[in-house]
Length: 344
Ligand code: UD1
Image 1: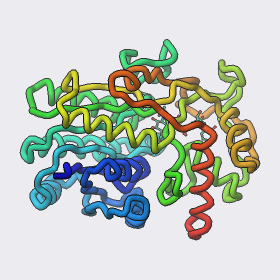
Image 2 (image 1 turned 90 degrees about the horizontal axis):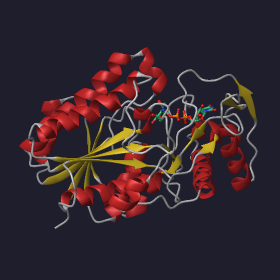
Image 3 (image 1 turned 180 degrees about the vertical axis):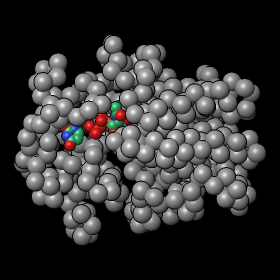
């Protein structure tokens, strides 16, 4: 029989790509999402790619009774992947309580309901933001956790702690904490991708919107950092590669292969790329120019961070496969698809 997985936040950017990979791997998926930062048409995209429409319930996971009812109606869920969260770093500074409430209450509800319904494991979306500016690069999972630079980052740190404490206290569940570096790109079919609300804050959606003419020019936030070309360095990871890591992590927990009840993995390529290098690579890969100018640093930005992904490579058995060129091409194809559909 197919195993059933709850994907909390499954119509979002990473959630939708993960749903596709779970279905491709033979899992049944139930998505719960309140559609606060995504839309229902994402289900069509998932169905076009996989031939399967996942079960979907529109619900705010802060509603514990509502979530309990959904779980009663969908018995037999084995694992949960928690994406549902607010994720805009800047907004979190303006509206901290929104972030603490959304991101923490949702996790508390899920952790309380898991043993009630015999759900065995939770994969949690964490972030390299927990490392702040690491002292040693590439950064490993053992690097110290630095004070969070934003309420958003703080919710990731707190949620990791909540999961660890809950399992330490004897709750019969397992967890894998996945620390993402910078997920970018879209499914190669361009059926699903990233749909930012309003003016994008993240680099790639701003870049592709500039390339297509929605934005006049891309601002490069600083060229006076202590890096080879002066711009910030990140580890950009293909979203489909990232999605596949969730399937591997879920299989590992459900097959009883976890070495510890809470395991932590960096999900990155191991390669640091600067903002200017990224713009050049995009232009080379797509043949499309990106008007850009250097402006001042963005407050709260970290100078440079990239992953040491060896643990994920060796222990989890997952390695990022896609080239940066192809990933950027997929982001561009998605932007063209949005234009065709008249969305953006
Ligand atoms: C941030 C968060 C990360 C979160 C991610 C997705 C921190 C430290 N990082 O990553 O946890 O998961 O957002 O929401 O909180 N840039 C420009 N021009 C732009 C936009 C960005 O030059 O218009 C540069 C930035 O300075 C940075 C790089 O591009 O060097 C990537 O920025 P962005 O895509 O916003 O991601 P992060 O800030 O790395």
